[in-house]
Length: 244
Image (tube, rainbow, N blue to C red; front, side):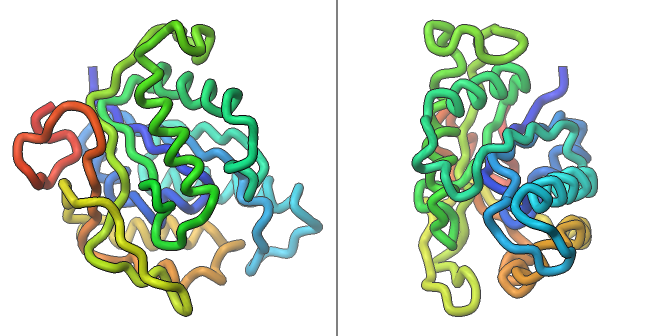
């Protein structure tokens, strides 16, 4: 059976900003790639497409997500449609059950999400999804927790949990304070995937007001921090699946 990667994020375009290279590398290596996105990003604004309000924006942004995921080679997208900007105050049990179910169904060796700081922009939704994805990583193997979660309803223990990270104090964008991520244990060379990453962001026509911030992420390397699971074969590796 092919190995599998699961990315868990808060908004459409988080995946393109944060782990576009890892997603595309994994798919081109023959691995299954699943993406969970908690909200439709309907609390933001649309820069390129006129919309009548949040409901229409949610529909448009979900369509953009599916197109961007297709560019990056994602096999399956699970869009949960929760309220944008409210993940930190949303009742955690129903969302956690969905994430546990996603882990059990996707059966990933590797789970990737934001770090506890919530990425360079420290978004509250990013911090919340980090906590919830981390909890799901540990709960998915235990059927006494959320026994009905997922269609398989079978336990699954991922091999590794990684947080997105970066070198030094990252300038999140214009007029934003720099933020430090978790200690780097894996660095991916994504030079060959930057064009696809740019094409993926092009799918987000509603979000082109963030183009300048996106350009800060167009770097040749992606960095990750191993949080839990099977140790890496070296202190710093060049593959999330090294040794698995």
